[in-house]
Length: 229
Length: 229
DNA sequence: GTCTATAACACGATAGAC
DNA sequence: GTCTATCGTGTTATAGAC
Image (cartoon, rainbow over all chains, first blue to last red; front, side):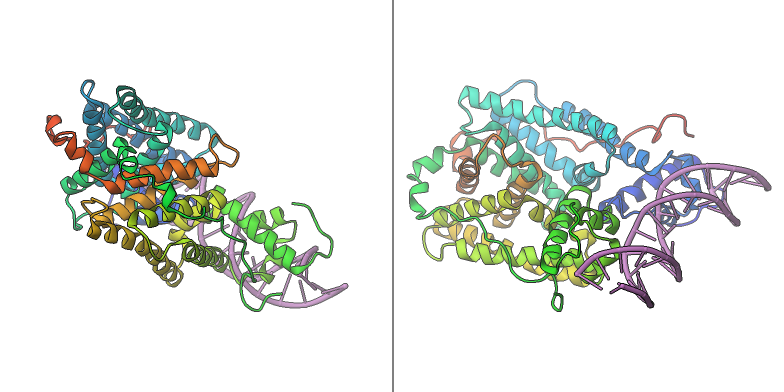
């Protein structure tokens, strides 16, 4: 925000990065203008081009940088040995901590893939698949050893990631729960999910309790707005 | 796409609606130009203004219309009576079926809230809270009766909705799984999650297996791109 | 209801002085 | 590295003929 007369490189760069994350997370990449970004940093719009070649490259650098960090941090946090439960717990704790620490970055990496040009998108998608794979391997292993009882580990991978990544859509620092509290609650839910259908079956066939299958919703009536047609 | 000479109102309107859903889901609201939309429908750009007053109103109509449909369909599908398990199963089956039937609408309602102007946003957020509330009530009731064992029903509500709504980010018609298959798999996971920590505890204290707490990732090095500075 | 034409403006990106 | 100025294009929205 504040103008720094004759200001220097690295500081401006970090300011651009931070302002960009905030603006993109709030309004989206397409809706963020470079004039807006420059104003937030306190420089003129043309000066931004000392830090990237074009707007697309700026987005890609943000996303790619985050994915590199994420992988490095995950590899440092994951356990090579141990039960599938222990490894899944570790993964969940890591994922929650990361989302709480950097909600903007994580959110952008999910929501702005659509804004990446084909080559850039391919690079990021490959990194994302690696990440999913690491969770998938834990679940596969746990099912093989009988620790987990999952009908479909691919669906479980997607479900768990969606559930955990959803955190960054509503989490606000200083809220009701601490990072520790969130980690405990979400670890509990993820483990319960992974341990799976044992309980559902133990409680007696659930499906039998529901009378008819749920119908698919029906098409809608009426004009887009009143007074047309 | 195809041009219809001297074409008529309701058909054009529906075509605009469908094309808009597709374009917004693919590229996002801000990135969709009205020229693009008109071209998709096969009319001139100015003609769109016979169907909405401005671009924002178009988005709001799409989202609001979907939310109205969603609520009506949910109310028709939900059980007034029955165990919490039966009601949660019903909710999950409904939610999955709805997402599979209309992935674009659902996705837009999550991803384009940021593009709504304040008044419009407030209206949609209120409707969304009602929806969350209906799931929350089921979970609260289940915990009160002892059917569910959940550490935090608010977190569970958000987790379940994120997990189910994630479906529309990867689901493609004609994939490996049928709607029935998806419903079964996700119902199983949701019920397992709701039945909760019984199992985690039964398997012996999980937390004890993990040595140190997971560290929060560290800040990153280096310039945005090579050659700057 | 659709068309053509255009107003009024914002956008990303570049050039050149300092 | 930052500034000012501007080019060329794309944008939403409007006006008026048919």
